[in-house]
Image (cartoon, one colour):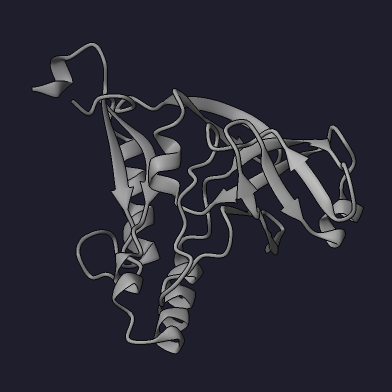
Length: 192
């Protein structure tokens, strides 16, 4: 039926990373499926995703780390928020323009799935955002302060990607520092 439509059918491929719910299990399966989709005139591959929900049920920190490492081997962090360093006011403090309107002010401060801060700096994941205000993110790190200058762009790995994506109308597909295309966030604002 969709082959007669003007707009092609857009599909996502799920890659199984440990939750054992659905998705491609082997790289060869993924390659074969991508080739099959590419050969279809009326089907477009929109992306590949995974879900590490099984880590939420870890028995203890050691089990959580083990499960997360297995998943990490399959699907490294694919989404970041681009932020600008806007000031270095005093001491170790650095301020960026990516506050709660750019990143969710949600984290897990305690428990087995605790996340430190409100996002981490890509490439320096041990450096975290300490505080979020509507338009500002504040980090207190001498290391980060020495790494950046006012005006620098940095990528932030959100503390919770699901609600962060819902803050945006558009996602940019980037590889090697170049924008390859855009994707609309079509479900944004659809809750009623």
